[in-house]
Image 1: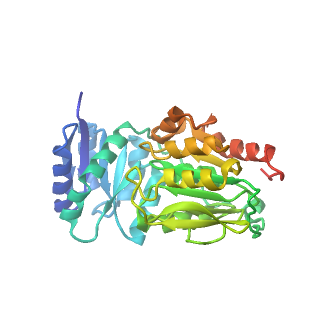
Image 2: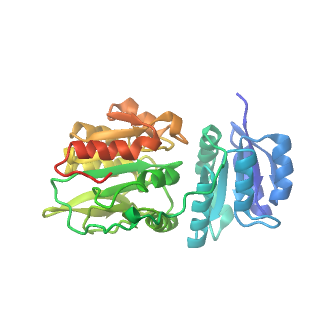
Image 3: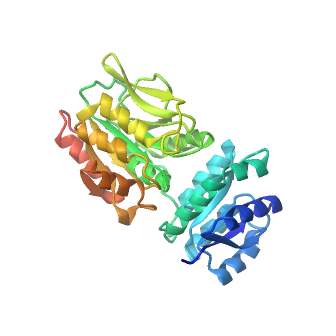
Length: 359
């Protein structure tokens, strides 16, 4: 089998050297070239036709995001962004995902050599995943926040009663854009949504704020013990598992710093399992694009507890890993393209709930 060809683009000679070593010591991939800036990279990519590119954000001669946008318009190629573990770095990484990057590799602020070697397995896994990912030509800029009348409808603030539905969502690679597409059409009177997206700790708050600026519902990073309200989406913080809890007649968010599950904290399985135990048939499960099998067992438990579950179809996934595993495990009731997911989920809830939704 041919090795995965990788081009590393980074203005730091140290980072280029470390990434090349991580890549070349894996038997199934090879760093075929490194470049200190996008102008040199452009020629290398044209000549070598790599399977994957790792791309730094801040570089001389051309900004990494500008180069990414040009690349995705002219020669769509799987790209892993190199982004610092900072608030500013997370915002730039989210913008890169909007432009078509498959995922990002977090660059530590200190002890770079030690940290990159520590996460070498994760880097290799992301390169393998990126090599299989489906990338599309960037045809247009991402959709700006809606300013229609519907977008500013008043949001409900009454507590969510246990008899009402909850939407429970899990995602990983490709999930930031899939979640945006899923959440943006959801009306303000929709049931509450709990989300676990695999993402580093410093990124989830920026991600939640970004979605909140785009969506008709309120989107926030979940806090321990807070009451769950309709018209709101709660995203697991990158440092903790998110679980569904209950206090009296209200659902609440619970956070746990327990051990990683399926190598992840937060874990989709942990969220799904809590929904099975607490909400049962009042939960609606959604599993979106992602690498690996996290969520498959938990979704099966939700199904066995009476929940109705949806999985994103292969054609619309960046990586058809998590949905595929959930389908194989037997926990999925419907397989739906991403473009139809919001409508199908809300239509099912409206048909199986005591109150209708303004879809």
